Amino acid sequence: MAFIEVHDLVKEYKVNIRNKGLIGSIKSLLIPEYTMKSAVDGINFTIEEGETVGFIGPNGAGKSTTVKMLTGILVPTSGSITIGGLSPYKDRKLNTAKLGVVFGQRSQLWWDLPVIDTFDLLKYIYKIPENIHKSNIEHFSEILGLDEFIKQPVRQLSLGQRMRAEIAASLLHNPEIIFFDEPTIGLDVVAKEKIREFVKFINKERNTTMLFTTHDMVDIEKTCDRMIIIDHGKKIYDGTVEEIKDTYGGNRILSVEFGQNYENILMSGLELIEEKGNKKHFKFAKDDFQVSYLIQKLSQQYEILDITVQEPEIDGIIREIYQGGIKLNESLSGVC
Amino acid sequence: MNLFIIFYQYSKLSLKTMLEYKFDRTFITLAIFFREMISVVVMFLILTRFLHIKDWQLFELFFLYSFLFLSYSLFIFLFAGIRDFDHMIHSGEFDRFLTRPLGLMFQIVASRVDYPATLGHGIVGIILFMFTASNVGIDWNIQNIIYYIIALIGGAIIQASIFMISASFSFWTIRVENLRNLIFFNSRRIAGYPISFYPSIIQKILIFVIPFAFVNYFPAQYYLGKEDIELFWGGYMYLTPFVGIIMFFIVYLFWKMGVRSYSSSGNSMY
Ligand SMILES: Nc1ncnc2c1ncn2[C@@H]1O[C@H](COP(=O)(O)OP(=O)(O)OP(=O)(O)O)[C@@H](O)[C@H]1O
Ligand SMILES: [Mg+2]
Image 1 (spheres, each protein chain N blue to C red):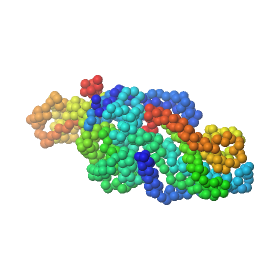
Image 2 (image 1 turned 135 degrees about the vertical axis):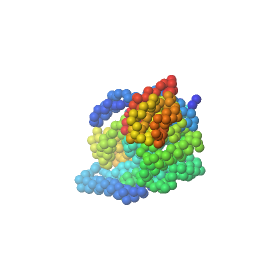
Image 3 (image 1 turned 90 degrees about the vertical axis):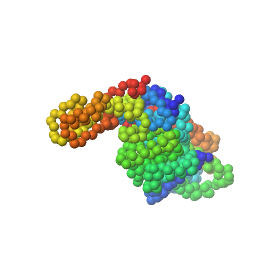
Image 4 (image 1 turned 45 degrees about the vertical axis):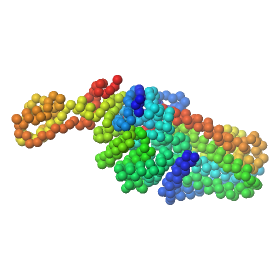
């Protein structure tokens, strides 16, 4: 049995058709009228201990809903979840003791008080032994650079500083599993990088299991071994980032700076996609042509100053998947 | 034991927050104090000029009134979280509680202590109590002191229960604070006078529906034994703690139902 097991998970929201006013509200309470809206629609996956999984999908795909079910905030409409053999909502107290949860859009820090005060409170809430609490704070401060603002009231912190404190707060009790729901939202590159490093470090050092939702593919590439893509509440991909690049990023971009402005460069396999004077960009299918062969052919016929080959951008691939431009095949997505 | 420590830690942070805004919170405390004192003064004027309530002396009436302030102060000290519960749902704070290894009601109650309101009402209550307690012929022996404390706690729980009913509605994202305030504060105002003074329908409402009679009238009668207690069953005088406990228990079931509904429907605010 895997550490986290999710079977046929379904979440349907009741969307109330509300009547106006108090009488209407009471009527809606007594005789509810509603439609069902399915947010998660039969998802299966398992996560092993120590795995880091990126959980992505377009807005409204059902990521946050899934995270809420995994953390015990919401009860599934049907299907099952077990985490280390426990049910997140039936065994809420037992389960949450070993969970860490970071919501990028929410704060758990005391707004008017210094960060350190919330850290202290968490010591009592999670019954963290004094020495572990202390060494964790020291440790986290060092990596996340909390020292410069740990004594400042939270309301005075920048978003990036607050997020770093937020993440530290969620990890003080050495959780076995951490759920991140968009922890890097709105952060600059440096702050993002710090958080990614920290996440990776914790995973390495403590073998912590992690699920990470984000809209930034760099987060996934840098921190996760595996990614799950969902759309409209259904899982459409489950595998590594590399795999998806290999399969769907079959094209490469060849950028060539020529010695002079040639008209109509014709060569089988190369498709011109952009040109700026002497600089031209071609697309080619990497499985059909070898780069060395193409370069050789080109240099035989033309004068070349500079040449680069680019890998496909994961963002572009994901975008195409979301827009339906790429249909994932079933064997790859592991849907069975 | 552990819960006491956590509760203490929470109230320490609330206190720190208050000190963070010393000026503002002092001002709020004073504002509440004067607002409530004005109601006391108005009552005093009415009672000395226009209104004579059969058999009740001025000190006795203010002794009756003091229960309202002291038990409200205690209620706010212990249960401000229930008062502010609406906000916890809408801000997502309640979701955070669900991800922690502690009871939900405990976290709601522990996470808020409203010192300004506690003090504002509490000081009015203490002033009234000091002026009246020794002038209304009560023998403050140990038994009377203990029942006094129990009655205050019971009264606080009754008021908490009323607030908790309205809090539970937020699970269905129905806002009823305004209705609650209307009902609660008017009942409280009415309960400022002996309920025997009112028509029978109002007496029944204050006993059976919004049981403010158990917050002040019946416990006060336990001490004063005024003649008009004959109108009611004598046992009521001892019932305050039981009414509190039973009411809280029933409301707690309703609240539980709300939690269940919440976790199956989610918070439509987010
Ligand atoms: N409490 C709710 N009541 C009704 N519908 C809801 C509720 N919460 C979410 N939904 C709907 O369920 C769907 C999934 O929402 P969810 O928040 O899980 O998406 P998401 O993948 O996290 O999106 P995003 O990337 O924008 O955060 C959306 O269509 C949303 O409108
Ligand atoms: Mg989301």
